[in-house]
Length: 339
Ligand code: GH3
Ligand code: MG
Ligand code: MG
Ligand code: MG
Image (cartoon, rainbow, N blue to C red; front, side, top):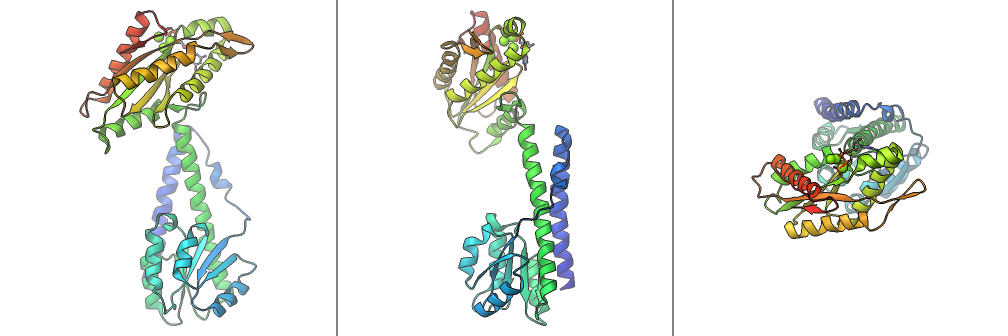
């Protein structure tokens, strides 16, 4: 049982260390602070879901933990599996004869929704071997009968603290990743995100289905900056981002490529489809002036469209062709689509 406890704790530490290191690296990338980690103290009452074989003992445990957690007792494994996702901690009675509590632990560990939920086992007096087995299968800790109320409460709190800490790490990692792939001005994805997607589209399962890329560049954008100021320029970029987003399908990926250049990745699109999407965007820009700081600015955009020439084509080559097509559109007089 001691060895199993050590192994269980080692496993936990590995997961948390990995998570912390990723969160820290990500934070450093965007120059953020580990603020999330300092805000982990929380007073919200925890929810514990317990699978206890007999209702009488379930009631007794619930009564003794009343001030500690909001405890819901179920006497059937199916009921536990059904609502486990909403709990903070799971308690499992290893003495439950009718069903196989060890199997229940395995099931919780293999389901996505409960994979990381803290599991606290209740062991029979003297049945350390079974408790050890529970730890090996993924339980985080156990308490032996006769149950000492304070020990149970303390072990419960420990699991809860760990869960909140991990959740904090996970949240900050998630937020940092979103920041790292989002353009702050337009709220669209940025070039980093597009690059990741281009690489995936190349190597992914749908690598054989074609896709198209359209590059957009606002026409004479320097004149807008020069004539109306940089803030007006920024507002034009925002408005363009909105119109771009409105004109594409949910499965298309729009991003700010850099400066006043934008890109749309269209999975599954052929040349004709891609050209018509680009044309729709061009029209959405020129058909109505941009309402910017009391003015109405006439804005136009040019685009270059390229269709992936098969899985083998390097993504840089595709980008180059789209850029060349864009250059042709500019040379041809702007406010048009190049292919
Ligand atoms: P054209 O593309 O039609 O050839 O002309 P252009 O005037 O748009 O040409 P160019 O691509 O050389 O100019 C882009 C300008 O966009 C230059 C840069 O100062 C401005 N710019 C780049 N990023 C931003 C930004 O985030 N905000 C603002 N306001 N301007 C930006
Ligand atoms: Mg440009
Ligand atoms: Mg240019
Ligand atoms: Mg331009």
